[in-house]
Image (tube, rainbow, N blue to C red; front, side, top):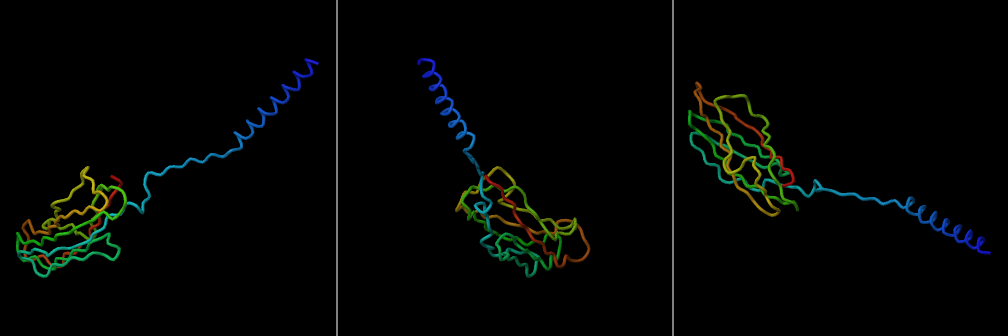
Length: 164
């Protein structure tokens, strides 16, 4: 009788072990992680201040509809040393900190006599926290010798941010 009981207990234990093993292998555990959703990373241009001009006529700047780009137009720089200085403000309207990775400029000709410089912003480890604003200036200036005047200088800037 002992041998028969031992076999029954072993069979029951094997069945329980198989059931547990089957359930472990059958259970699908899905682990997924995200670093940050792209939609949560959103830095936009919010304001263009009063453009300061010297030797420049009718410089303008406007923010695109999607608030991701600024178009700057300097129709005339009259002499070497002339400039237009455009104050711009950006804001992190996302939910995660952002860090400036790069600045893209479109439409800038290979004109060695014109310089476009950024004052108050740069590609650093500085982080723009959610809700924070940052102001800076974009200066378009005639810095090198050139005969005549500089006419119709227009370009677009876009800042590329990554998670800070």
